[in-house]
Length: 531
Image (cartoon, rainbow, N blue to C red; front, side, top):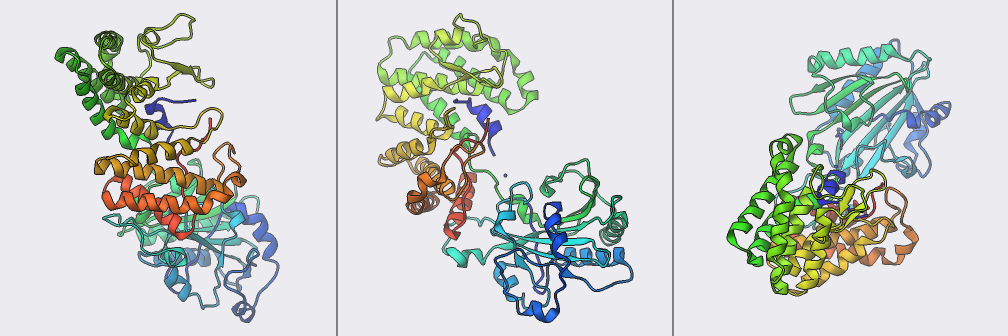
């Protein structure tokens, strides 16, 4: 089903990291690993045997049993303080691997244990270390490496493969101590919080804690150090574990979602005004439509703006009725421009609600339907969604002209999977490469390159096992296209970044290109993301 641009923007999708000092860096995982780790801590490992182990075993790492200590809460708090203090900017995977020749062996985190709910984002690599306190409490440490910050300007990556992976930066650490009793290890929790408060001052509260992937009903404190490193420590009464999560500020600048149609709003606004001019309608009426469009855009900015700009609702249908009346005898190109302008107004008005002329479920045609607008009913919510058919008609009326190009660019930006899960990314590739064969202005060409690159990236992601939120896609269907799609995506990102390397779209394209060049799976854009 095709959703309105505003609804799709709200639907669209974007982190956490730590750094580890050259000698050791420890990270603790949460209870998803506890059942396995607890079974493994039974086997003791000597320092000499660990020294002969491979650095990246194929099976899950064996737990290492700590030597006895007189005060476990103090010992655990010291471990946490050490890990937090070692979290610094600039430690790359290459530097960390070079310093791993110590008895404290870290092991590559098994791929099957990496899930979206447990990890803070699409990291390059993650490593783990499991050991226990004498009481039997399991400690898991997790260290996450992420792509380096997006450069400015966002120049296309010059490295590839392992050379690129080696530039990933340690940016987040998780430390978890599993409770050994049904009441939990509150002593460990209290010791950690006291130690962190002594070092970093009073807790600043628990706001903005999404990166730790736990519900806000857990007891926790939060600190921000002098370098804006974020530290969260607390106790999970449901999982019965003590946790500490730390991340560097670099994660805040990492885009987590691909550019959706909302990133093209400025382009659509420019297209609207150009379409009004090309429609050649009376100046007074054109002015009324442009004022209406401005009010609709303001209303979409926030609920407060929607209330202040509410007077436009009653004028939308009458203005569009006058607009279409003026276009009745217009030649195809002018009518195409008029349709595109009207489409932009209706796209923005789609989520406002309470609009006279919008379908309400009766069999009688609504006012907007009488003008030719086509709607589909959302079976989940019962709402009626505008299908952007005026934009499609505009392209049909002026397929090789300026209006047709603007309409095609809008269709690509709005592309959304149909109810049957059809491969919209394939249509984006077809439309985009068709546009690129024409004489596009440089900014438009860059945007098209980025969108086509995203579409090819979807094929790579699906072939790599990403099947959309609802599992609509079969990875085997695209296995033979994975390599060529990766190269095509990289070619388009390279071409787009050669034109535009400063915009937000360019930054997101750089992130996609980085993952592809490194041999990692990119994010998805044009696949179905759920009901």
